[in-house]
Amino acid sequence: GSSVKGFTGIEESDLNLKPDPSTFALVPWEEGVGRFLCDVYTADGRFAKDPRFVSQSLDEALGEDGLKLFVSAELEFFIFNKMGAYVDGWKQSFEVISDESSWVGVAPFNRARDGYYAPYPKDRFTHLKMEIGDVLKKYFGLQVEVIHHEVAAASQHEINFRGGATTFTADATQTVKYVTKALAYKQGVIATFMPKPIYGDNGSGMHVHVSIWRGDENLFYDPNDSYAGLSQFARYFIGGLIEHGRALSAIVSPTVNSYKRLVAGYEAPVYLVWSKANRSAAIRVPAYSNSHRSKRIEYRPPDPSANPYLALSAIVLAGLDGVRKRRDPGDPVDENVYRIPPQKRRELGLKELPRSLEEALDELEVDNEWLRPIFPKELIETYIELKREEARKVNSYPTPVEIMMYHDI
Image 1 (tube, one colour):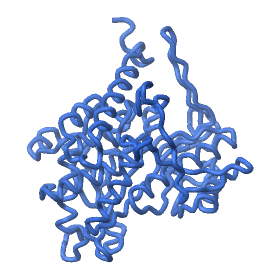
Image 2 (cartoon, one colour):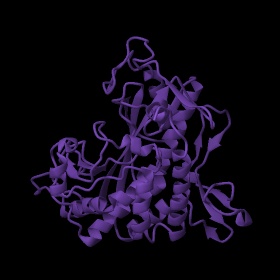
Image 3 (cartoon, helix red, strand yellow):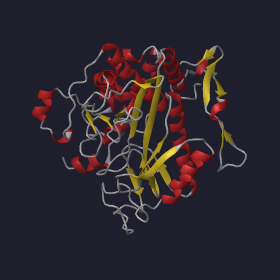
Image 4 (tube, helix red, strand yellow):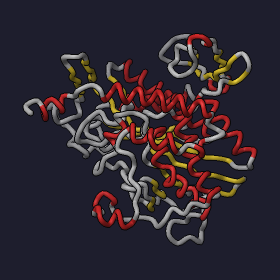
């Protein structure tokens, strides 16, 4: 346990992994190798800081209340021909190479923010994505719904799969990342789920879709609601996300790099507002269909660097706290939030997402009661401590941009 940062100290380091038989899968790129996802145990029972234990506890608690959660995640990622970094006290640099980008000069290429649904040959990795989908379905039992080229020019992609309960979807998220990276490596390229690897183009998000059911009743649906077919239960759920969204950022956007994605103009949210179909809002009610079966909300701030067991659980707990406390989400904001003048934003009382990981951790430190008792107090405290250490380390390094801007002061 002491070898896994944040688990235990060296003086109490023995932990056990118990394979979950339902997660067994043969690994097609390694002959005779199978994969299990495991639960972490101490000699006395479940290990409280195991993230999978958190999501399992949430699923169990919802079941005891007669509720069923349906959650799914859209995973965005980049495929690069080459990616590397050099860091020491005297020299720091990084390099990203993509045959799809204009700076490499291999025509045809995509222009910045113009890659959405790009076909072959602008999409150089059509066959790799087809292989990813086939392997996920044939060997890992996931129902892949779509894999397509995303907005960013340099080979950004998105994969959607059919979700389910919290733990199922978190397991599936880990599996998708595992398979995608492995198959990319086999083809001599690099798949990365880093939120913002390229300046001036869209970053990669992990948009989370949620609905809650009681039997066959979708508690988010109200056919009499003229705005979005959304129930009062769903509106209170949105109110919880807005109320706790700043603290929630520390879990769903958990890296220094995450906040380079959360800037205006790149289809990533900046303000904690809700709307129908509006992609500049943090919480969106998809408008593809207004049916009982499809009614859900989409939470857009998360990115794929998040631990899915913690992130999905925290999103649901924030929403359910809003339901318990009947949090009014306020009126929807249907205009492009990026273009609302600052004075009007202040008049509307729009809450802004944190601009840095440190700011998000400050929020989580004072606003975390809604996570308990599903999140153990010790887990929250350890998480904040580790993430503060990570932020201090990353921010202590001068960057090339700083040298460029400040070298002649």
